[in-house]
Image 1 (cartoon, rainbow, N blue to C red):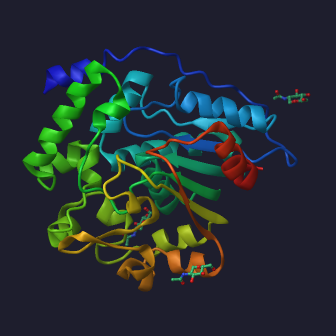
Image 2: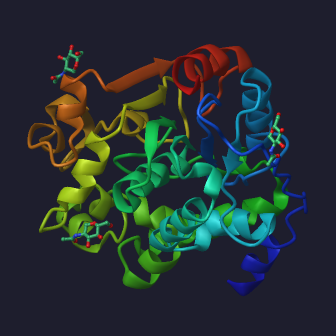
Amino acid sequence: MLAIVAFVFLFQVVTCSSNNANISSADEPLPVVLWHGMGDTCCNRGSLGAIVDLIEQQVPSIYVRSLRIGDNEEKDFSNGYFMNVNDQISFACQLIRSDDKLKNGFNLIGFSQGGQFTRALVQRCSLPVRNLITLGAQHQGVFGLPRCEAVTNNLLHNSVCDFVRKLLSLGAYNSFVQKRLVQAEYWHDPLKEQKYKEKSVFLADINNEKSPRNETYRQNLVNLNKFVMIMFEDDSMVIPRESSLFGYYETGNIKKIVPLEDSLLYTDDRLGLKELNESGKLIKLTIPGDHLQFTDDWFTSNIIEAYLK
Ligand SMILES: *[C@@H]1O[C@H](CO)[C@@H](O)[C@H](O)[C@H]1NC(C)=O
Ligand SMILES: *[C@@H]1O[C@H](CO)[C@@H](O)[C@H](O)[C@H]1NC(C)=O
Ligand SMILES: *[C@@H]1O[C@H](CO)[C@@H](O)[C@H](O)[C@H]1NC(C)=O
């Protein structure tokens, strides 16, 4: 296990550039905070780094902060697999609270697992978030971890994928695994719903499945200006892909998907999603393509123009 973790640290070093924007004033655009997905880092030039550049090009003088979970990019990468998500949320909360440029409000965007992490950040940290946007998130968790290799796209990283898969089949709800493996913390087995509710240290908590429910979680989501969720129609990574819009397998039946609107989580409104929807603040978008496959043009008109300006 240590040998595999050590592989992760061989991950190519890329310096994390943070463009220090000017102090924000009233007429400057609202800053934006990004949280990357699994197998990615804050500043990878081929993925989130490019999104940072795109936003900066489209919105002059905007302050963009791409969260780096850990002291350097290698840690940021491996923490996406091995740092307890609850600790990651606290870490991210501190990063944001200690950034003066974010204290007067910001928009928040989460990519893939960063989607449910940003939502947890809103629920737990009571930050001044205006719009929350999640792309290809796993809001109801996953039951399957295919194509890990395709995301990480690197031979060394493939050993991480194998390792993660082995741990998950070993027992996602085992407390050792729950505390240490990120993907187990949003593993949602529809055939073991009760066990999931009891043992899931992250997802069952932020989805208010534990008792007593946390009213702060609900209140913080209801306070958003907009909560925008994006699902990729041909997503082969998120199993089931409807999880990006809070849909999920019916309990005990992996042949049937229950959309958000028909779920108990919506009708009892434990997360305030019904209230958000009824006031026109819950936006569900579906776009063609596989996981996180979108063009700069799509991102510019549907995200930047629509929600960041
Ligand atoms: C911010 O920008 C203005 C004008 O663009 C400049 O005068 C000011 O010194 C800048 N402030 C900081 C802290 O960089
Ligand atoms: C609800 O969540 C908030 C924010 O994480 C926390 O401070 C509070 O203790 C929680 N309340 C309960 C009853 O668990
Ligand atoms: C959610 O909001 C949309 C648009 O206002 C509405 O058409 C839809 O019926 C709502 N869904 C539910 C289940 O209330």
